[in-house]
Image (cartoon, rainbow, N blue to C red; front, side):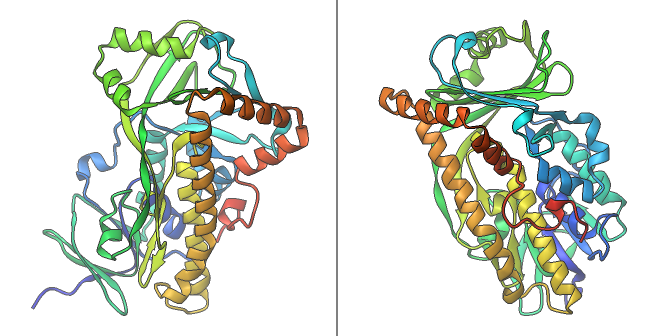
Length: 415
């Protein structure tokens, strides 16, 4: 007879940013009614708590920052966060230093607060891990892959190599775009791959960016310069997949030359201070965000084009909504893993996700081309928006994640 499964209220498959943030929202030090949570991740325990820099940084919107404050995470992040005080969007016409600014957002258009902060993902991960590790209600099982899933009537049980079985009333899939938990539950996805890849890295420059973020819409895709602390910027360079591969194979001098043509000289001399990383781009949405004993969050639920920098923020929206749904259900004595309870989460999150996916896909298709007719129409439209101060404020509120029906955590309220 096999050993009985270790029992938890919630099992989280995946210990990346979304998995850790989910655990912090359910069982972190700031949670009033913590759940007993187990995080399962296949990463080596020695490296799990010490993430390596992967070239990526996240734009933490105003609502996401409120959530991180409510979870007690933001104070440890504040020194590593750079406020985005100005956003400039340009077209591809002209050399890098002479591109016309089509749309400009300044602090006067912000919704009473800085609309976003840039934070390197390695810092986000470290701080979230520290918060979760301090919680007596979270057990982290790193270095163990899940071999099998059993979605039962009363719980979901996962089998771990060399450890045995772990069961939870609810399994949360936070295991990325190729989610094994999603596949095991038979949840299908819809979407497509883009003929683009995103190259990310960090640069240092002589000039001060003063919190200015730039997004240059070039024919192959957007080229974003995003402010980091100090005289550094995070680069997200979208390029055609074939050329992106060629860029990654170039030596440092050749790559620098290609990069400088797009970066320009506004910030003076510029130097790469990290490795380059390249990621394929795609759109993918799960046909269901929840089922009996299962909820999907983050990339397991949706992958969108990074053109608006909303990836991690969408995951935090999932986490805030799911945490509120299961907390409300627990207070009423309900079973947190049933379809009836989780349907509220799915309804709350699907429409917003589909709308964001459609918007990012449409913007990418509209701007990632060199069609003169389309360029004239889009430039005219952006020019109208740029001259309409009230409309820009509305856009900034939307970008800051402050519109619509917000979960309590995204409003800065504890659960």
